[in-house]
Image 1 (tube, rainbow, N blue to C red):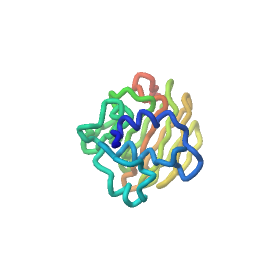
Image 2 (image 1 turned 90 degrees about the horizontal axis):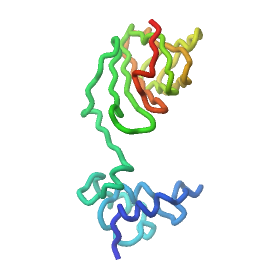
Image 3 (image 1 turned 180 degrees about the vertical axis):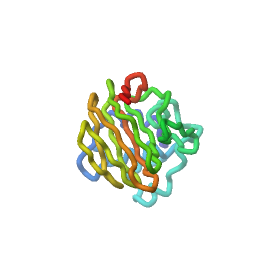
Image 4 (image 1 turned 135 degrees about the vertical axis):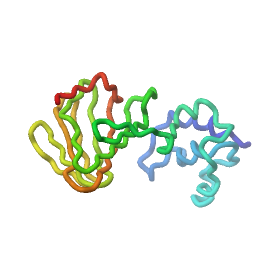
Length: 187
């Protein structure tokens, strides 16, 4: 008998992953079960991987219940407004959302510098997506390029700048989530 995926999702979220190929103990792949919406008929382990991939439907179909919607958050970049923060271009993916961590895209134009600052609340993880950025951590200068990560612990003083002629782009994760009132700018 076909079972709605949202119902199955509620049941499967309590299971622990096995170390076997990233699958759940019953052999199903949880991504398949969350993203395929509606009646799936037989259990996914009875289908080949290619059939399972081909059977996927859009995430936000009308029959996806509220519980499953709360587990999944899709934020399209096109829906965000860029904020100018002292020359930095910031797109905050999680602004005004009740989340435990926050995510922002930061574009650092050539010659732009982030003020020396520190956070009373959050650890920060900067991932350089494109370009080069010079981080100043306390008084140590570290040059980062595409693919590098800089972690700034809560309370640590930092700043960064783009000394190149091309814009750099980073993703920034705050944990716990960003609150401007908890950020201290020294310059």
